[in-house]
Image (cartoon, rainbow, N blue to C red):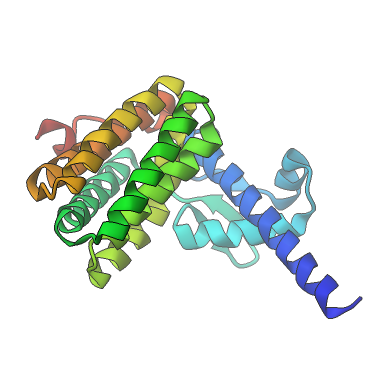
Length: 234
């Protein structure tokens, strides 16, 4: 096998592992795999119709995200996270992304703002098509662009790191088609504020948007329904 074949095979395995990682993360976020449950490689391979290699790689990715605990010679289990911890992560990412939106409103270049419009329109197209995967990708792209538009490396790194941990739970909300429409309308207000250089509104609306995402997660995945928390009482 030549070098090109090896590189193609590695890329294919990587993409398959990424797909399996998303699917397991979805199962965890939807409450189908509860905290403390064992994630057997053979069971997962059979469930997702793949070999054990991409499953093993996926579990390593999930461990980095904090969703899975991989214990030497003892296998992998779903991390023991409570609804209170999830509330706190959403509260933290809400503050971080809100700060990024505020800075983005003041610091984005005209080129940045043009791309922001394009990404928002992609979200509209995905929402109108009721395409879950496409809207999830558009949502990720829009939020990532706003983070980068803050031009604050420390904020971007902190928000990106926490975003990886929360992303499976944010993703589940779009299993509810109505939530796509709500999310898009919330994006519209945020985008308009950033384009208008309105830092105060951009901050406030981004923070509210993440609070809404947490509530939507609870509706889709009752296992992660939040008790009364500081997020909801403010």
